[in-house]
Length: 113
Image (cartoon, rainbow, N blue to C red; front, side):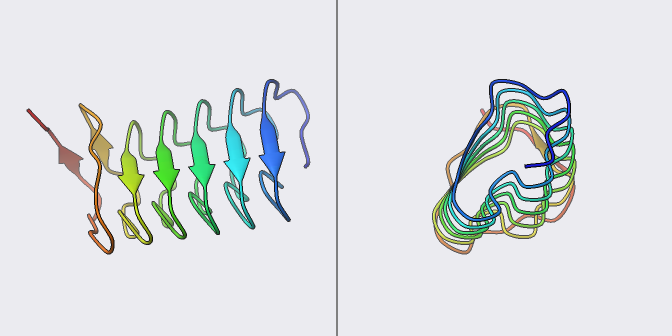
């Protein structure tokens, strides 16, 4: 981990949270989980390459291999299942949502009742 001032982070797995610098309260469990994260806070990634491309996105939860894989700056997204929200890059949800295998969303905002 390249941690400089980040705190309260947990990383378990090869390259998990490898590039974290100032991110706070992140949990990464699995090979390449949250590996590119540098400034994102309060993210949880469980699974191979879950939230791998996240750089500054905050409050995301990805459970499943490659869940929310492409996310870079998206906020408050929740994905459950392998490849769930795989192509979400900058999308933001106003309320969390749980998705099944292979559901994807391109950048944008989704409001859930």
